[in-house]
Image: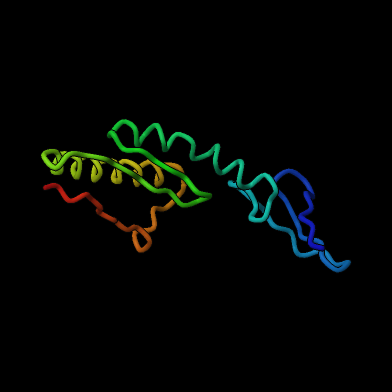
Length: 117
């Protein structure tokens, strides 16, 4: 079994098989694998939903993945696209200010609609 050991404030090491690793100095964030990590990350990013709502966009979070949703009528497509673009830009700025990075390689847009007769 692997254990993360707090040596002193912000200094950790790993204990496995009767052996301690070298010391790990953490200046910010939560060590990966921490039991509190997922909860603290959710608290850290909680205001993203409020930020998205300012642009009329709904945010759904799944661990460290986020999905943005916007619903519009066909007459409002251009306005909704502009709102979504502004929202993504604002989220990118928020992430930069909070020491996170928006991974543009993993950012995708899926456009769906219904057929109107």
